[in-house]
Length: 340
Image 1: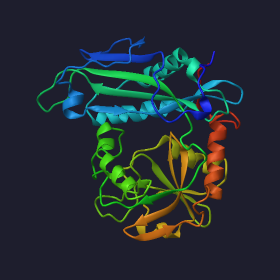
Image 2: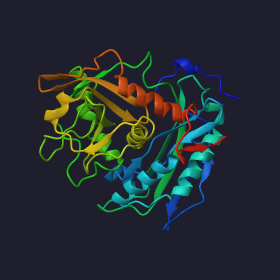
Image 3: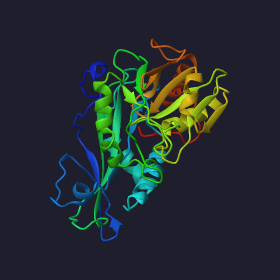
Image 4: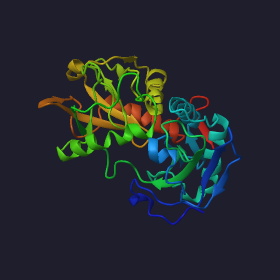
């Protein structure tokens, strides 16, 4: 029985659900894991996560398809990306099959919170891991906790999608050979001042350049960027400091295999941004967010797709990927994990 929630007016925020999955790492191994009704985390005051930010997270969704199945989109990719992240942070890997099992168990335990098809709402899943034992010297912890909670969320854009405005900031997002390519909590902490500052200046997000030369486009604080050329080639920036977005990689596959478009993952110079006809941000929460304008220190770049709606190619990409996710189009093998 679906919960009595006003799905159409649901925001993008936290709502406590009935169960969350918890597993602890101690003495070199993970325990069996449990589902718990307790949403509180109790830690020592000197826990490694509090002292040295040893923490990371993922984000994915469960939702109902057109034929009322409850599914998740490519959870194996989230498991792989978390494994890459924890290795970089000297944390233990939570194996892929256990990660997917935790996803399935948590969704099944909170099945009544999965919104109905067509509501625009989804059940957002947040797997995360942190250092849990007391650490005072600068070194990796020896005990960790993996947790996964679920919360129903409304559509990212309430009232429809409107193109956003980006600015090129004076802040850097990530250093070469740093942690920009992994989903560590510390990356997001250091982006908060820049996004607050952008909002104060009237912009929706920051378009970060590479910190070494400040000539190449990288990503925003929380999403990868795609561009569309005048001949409908899909271009996405390539850099060792960009987080490998699962949505972006899926969109590039869809562009090529479903829409027959040419795709390029390459370095994108800031000087060529003015030559693209469309631009969008991509990520789990919104899938695609159209960009209408980029402001680079007073120099405005206005994309031909405009400030009123998604560009034609961006819209096709959005419709195709969401069609696959919602069961309206056949999915590539392995993309959809059926839960109920």
